[in-house]
Length: 212
Image (cartoon, rainbow, N blue to C red):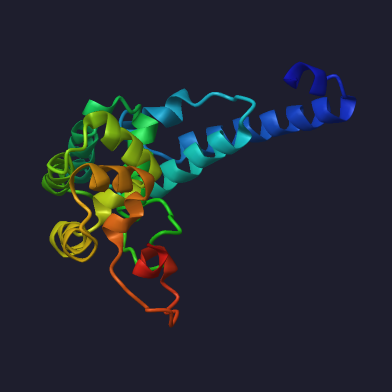
């Protein structure tokens, strides 16, 4: 299908223009980042043009957003430790950066709206959340699916949101065990609900129990 589309002179010209634009963006972004940081985010150095222009655009944009916060050796060390916490799920570095970036406000996520402050994640926090989710009888394969669907879970408060919401599900709806596992795989955002407007909208719909 792609080959047939490029037979059109107009499409071929547009594709070539996009390619040149992408190369220029990549070169500009690479030159603006200190060489000591390129090893930290290899996706920037290795980025290649593909037919999916939006994917490359996201890589460059998210890389810049993360680099604006991860500015010193201590931050880079903390970020790399959190990457390692995700190593059990066979994500590549770009996926790990996307998950952590969305969870801690370094990459924009509609889930948080404007409420989430940018934060360099701590290994203890990320690992603690993963351990708790495993205690809910979620396998690493389950967690991989959950994190792809709801990466922001790593940025939710463990005590006040995750544990409190699991308690609500158990006590108010008798949801636990296998039913809980199925629910979390289907709708993991329930873990982060922290408001109940009871039908009187408070403009925080992504985190409201009314959606349950």
